[in-house]
Image (cartoon, rainbow, N blue to C red; front, side, top):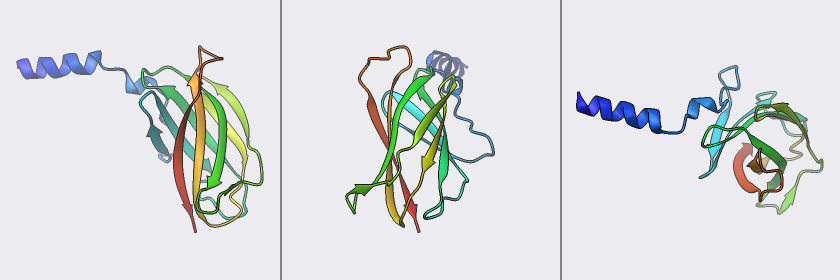
Length: 137
């Protein structure tokens, strides 16, 4: 019984992961994180095709469960040492939710999406970069 109480106390005192809006709907998407941030991301359309534009639906949060600010999104092909031919646009939807339009992977291969974030309550704060890899065939 004491073990159960200790586990319950630990659970209650830990940052509330559920407060961060990681559910993107449709039961799809990925979550990636750093020491300070958590990002949930889902492409629309879900299947990314070579040469076809797509967008990313993103929820950006601190590990404490607070909304964070999405500052920049870019993608590169590290093996080819070049990036996308288009600059995406970011639209804030509130509470750490974002829509990133204008993404296009113009060739198959490994793509690294870089996401720059910072605390929402500190607009001048230093940004942190998180990355996620897509493999496009």
